[in-house]
Length: 283
Ligand SMILES: NC(=O)c1ccc[n+]([C@@H]2O[C@H](COP(=O)([O-])OP(=O)(O)OC[C@H]3O[C@@H](n4cnc5c(N)ncnc54)[C@H](O)[C@@H]3O)[C@@H](O)[C@H]2O)c1
View 1 (cartoon, rainbow, N blue to C red):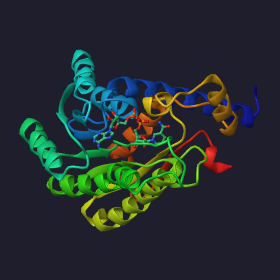
View 2: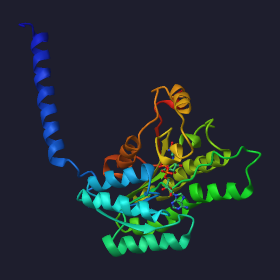
View 3: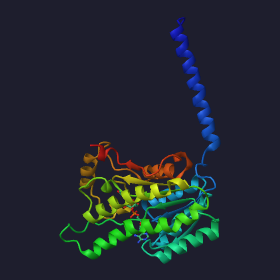
View 4: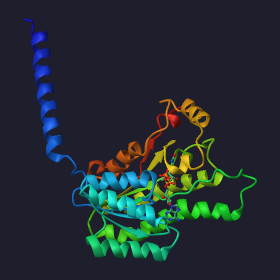
């Protein structure tokens, strides 16, 4: 224990220990404040990842407006947030309706006075028909919900976010927006690929205004979108086998990625794509 190398190691160990303790202390002091004083709108928040993001954002100090077409479930998510001591309200909102978007912005401003964050999360998948069986109506429906609504949402929120001098928009895409995932309908892939580039183009447009716009690309996540279509143990096994990390993810694992992009922690990140897929697209 006498050499200078050993002394250096001991000193380093002590320093690391001190840093770790202060990290823990800071974490304790700052806990649940990653979105302190922020106002966030999250679409499709009655279920799945949107609901998880709403609960996490509220727990981290945000006032949250949750929107969806499913009013009963919105009420449940709001009640859970309020019961946990958070601030939330909801708007019944079809993301394909510009009039509904106006309602969402008006209610958010009336309740909380500003908009800092928008998460364009609402989405629709189709597992019911093959490429040749798809109808133009179905194609339009998927594109309108998954892609055009992100555009309308950004057009609605940006004039309000602009007034804050900075803000963050997170557009939920998918690994289906990066590769032709075998479980995705081509219309779904088209919509999610569109979200990826819509995000980058908008990010460039608003970068000088400090409005950051990024996309998140989840892999297979255990939400009603997947389970409602019927996820048999065999199907889950097949999915697990296709993912390097060997499993489907839970919604909270995506919610933390969305939280990071929504918060000021990602202050120099815009136009990027954050992939949350257990390594699927790295193969
Ligand atoms: N679950 C996955 O494996 C997965 C993977 C990649 C991407 N995604 C995407 O993540 C997002 C969230 O999906 P999820 O998995 O939580 O699914 P989910 O079905 O649990 O949630 C989607 C929500 O969107 C709402 N919605 C649908 N159409 C709407 C409309 N016209 N207006 C307003 N709300 C509407 C639904 O009511 C639902 O509450 C979607 O954009 C989805 O495409 C999901």
